[in-house]
Length: 380
Image (cartoon, rainbow, N blue to C red; front, side, top):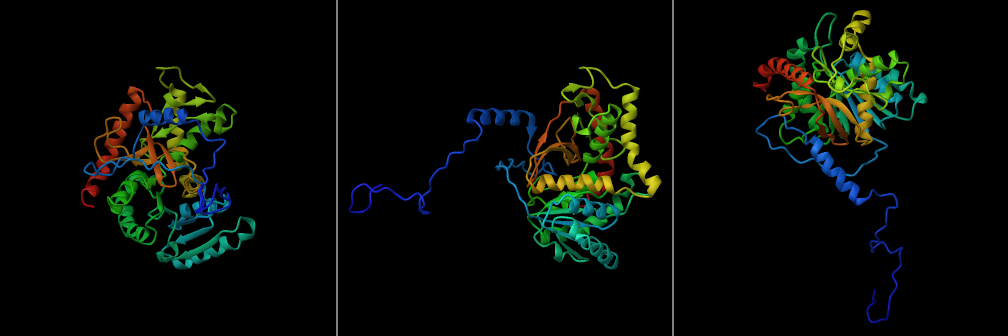
């Protein structure tokens, strides 16, 4: 460097006006980065817009982030909403937690009850209101509001009532937290996610609204297999995809115990394995018949999804997103498939290899969901 009118000038490294490139001693090798970019392009697809007339936008390739203090809003303080709040507080996920419900008296009691336990978890500021002002500038909004599933009632039978509730909620959420990632937990989860996405409109970023989907179903699936083998469930890898409900699909061809495939290539699941999937489907019905509702497991899985998004961990989880064009699906159907989640919601959609029978089951699942969704979809 040459100073004006002087000889050689050695700049001060502390000078904030000069940018000094700092080498990262643990940065990935550039060749490896390029290799895995090609791999990702070959094995995954960008988020699919809710309507085929909308352009498919490229994924936002941002570096990993870590966010320690965030704001989460939970809409709906029924049993599921309360389960979500309890799990979020106990997992120290956010710095501010807002609770919203139309029943202000009950809401006040629940919020005070949680607040009085503040000495036993990391400091989280708890807000509560029957209006959406308390949700202002949330990083993540979890929607659990809706009519609860009753004993003997399927999730799909809730669609009309909960769609009308969602129509009132979505404008308020977007008005107060336009940058938030939105997680739909209300049932029927897949159709509610589709409706929420369409209500948000084409200008809302694709992938920022997704459904809890089969995240919990997959946990139940892995746990049943692991317990039968006296293993930690985290050592069983596999997915339940499709509907969060009766027509879900166990991808037996993807199941690994440790590094070992559960089935040999081309082998179909036998009667015993099919019973495991039946138990997964019946799990919620069994709990509802015993206690009247489900809340703790869905609360824990919701908190898990919130942690992934808020900490930007890029974990791959089966959640509900648009699957039009995948596995021969033609309609604007939302179903669960493995997705990479980031602070922006669904980052990429993994195209999981399926057997012919799994693909056929997925197509039947999509068709049954579309038959329920289409009458509402066309009138949104």
